[in-house]
Image 1 (cartoon, rainbow, N blue to C red):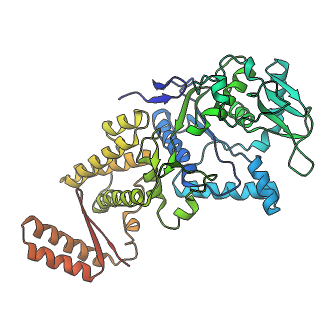
Image 2 (tube, one colour):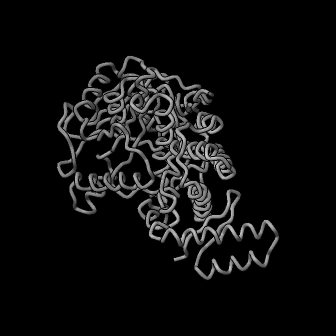
Image 3 (cartoon, rainbow, N blue to C red):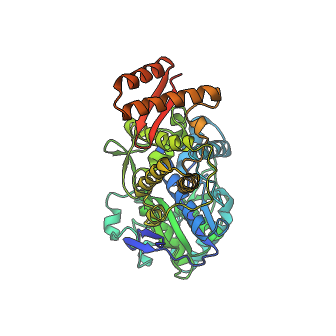
Length: 461
């Protein structure tokens, strides 16, 4: 079996994955800032790294993988929401954290093992800042604590840009209290009417970058196996995390593998709240099954951009119909306890190549549809379900998928027989009989979709 390889942004190449400790594989992914509803672009990293989480558990054991995804519950945007609504910070963050969890559950995203909240780690953040000040890597200025980027020679190693390049057009605040324009804030003063905590540096609140450095180290260790997030986090967020963490931990690397997913786009523009071109998961859930949305997010390789539109969702729905159609035809077959085929595993082990893996799923479905013996059917069904588990797909009830759970079984058998007679007539080029069967199905308001794995149907009502 091919070894698991992952594209490491730091190395700019795929590398064979070798955890520090195979009995405790660690992964940290930057989670949501909870002040509003999540859009489908926010869901992409959650689905991508959930899929990797599944692969890691299959490779090392479900109890050997420790996955942390944080909640950012103090932030400028949260404070803006407080000022707009008059609600308390905790009320806003708890509400939208719950909504985020529900949205991700709808996409069959597993809960991480650990879900640390920034506000629960203020003490540890203060300790890290004090250590960095003591070592000369950070300094106090006008109630702020700032990291000195010129004191870390490897600053820019992740984004592969010089300090001047990073400052040009970047989200960098130029201020008199900074020694260098690129120095970033670890602690900022808080006015009496905004959230804040007492500290040796004065009343204030932490910077975003500091939060993740502290939470990752506390829950997973100074050096973790995998750190993930969206491509937009490479700079400044992950670059700054590395600088803080490496300097606070005597030069130890923060993570051995850095993984970043590509953007979701609406046309040519990145989906973002600031551009106003977002599609909320909460709204999509009213129109599509969660499995359709998850499948759509897996159709492109995670590092590639993905254009989101109605056509993508329509194609995804038809693809799932084909898979569930095969599973419905095998409903009376007990699935064999087997693993997914090697070709599927190799695709997943090749930097989580989900487009290739999905193609392998249809190869399995084709074999399942052609299987003639009970043993062959059981093995093919088992392989199809095993592959689906790693992708988070095809685990539901086929009858429920097609809306047939409340239909009389005898009526279902009657329609199945009518569809089979139509297929037989078409195979025999008896077009009159095929048309008659089709007319009867239409009369009964049955929609039939033909595909390589056979025909699927559902009631139009």
